[in-house]
Length: 325
Ligand code: AVJ
Image (cartoon, rainbow, N blue to C red; front, side):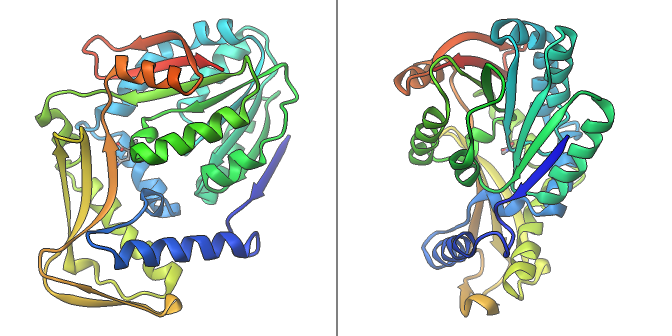
C-alpha cells in the first residue's frame, strides 16, 4: 500500500542537483541576496515548521484546520470519490480531516503526497497507513515542478490537487503564473484544485506570527544556513546572522530575511563559491504573500479554474477555495 519515489536525492537526478546548485549560486551572488524558501525545508526545517504551527502567535494552521473541519464533508460530497494529491504535504495533519470525510462516505482512499523533505514524507506516510487500513499512498519526494511533471492519470474517476497552508504565498507573481500553468496541465477537465490562502489583515497580527516570543521562527530561518553548510560544504556561522521578519505593506507580503551582524566572508566549498556580506546586509529567505479573496477568485478564473465554493473563518483571516478545471 506504500510506494515512495525520490526525485531529488543525488542518486535520483544529476540534473536536479545542478539546477539547485545553480539556483543557490544565483541567489547568493545577486543584489539583494535571495534564496528560494524551499531551502528552509530540510528534515530539521520541516520539524521546526511543525513547531511553528503550534505557536500561539501563528494563527494560519489552526485557522485553516478549523475551516477544514467545517467544510471537509461538503468537499467530499462535491468531488465524489477522488485521488488526493497534496503539494507540500509535510506532516499530513490536515490531510486527515479530508481522508476522514472521504472515508465517511465510503470512498476508496488514495493519497499522493508531494514534499521536498523525504524524512517528513516517509514518517507521515507510515503513520497514515497505520491509521487508515484501506489507504494507498504513493509519495513523491521532490519539488512541485518535478512532481507535477510526473503525475500519471489517476486510478480513480477524478483527482483533486490540494495546496494548503497558504504555501502559494511563497511564490512571486511570476512564479505563481508558472505554477498555475503546471497545475492546469496536470489536471484533466472536471478535476479539482483545493487551495488554502492566508488573507490580508492588520499588521500587528501578521508581524507577531513571524516573530514569535519563543524564537522558533528565528531557529527555522537560521536553520537554512545549517542546511546550506551541510549540503554545499559551507561555513556559515549561525551566530553571525539574525532573524528579521516584517510586513511589506506595499506588496502585501511578509518578508523573512537573515541579517548579517557584521561584515563577513562565507564559503560554500562544493560550489566553489565565496560570498561577501556587509554589516547589516540581508539575505531574503522567504516571502509569504497575503491575499484578497475576490482578487484570488478572479485570478483563478483567468487561469481556467472556476471556484465552486469558498469557506473562511469568522474574521476572516484565512480562506479555503474549491475550484474546478
Ligand atoms: C508554510 C509557507 C505557509 O509563509 O506562513 C512560517 C512558512 N515561515 N513561518 C508561511 C513560515 C515562517 C509558512 N508557509
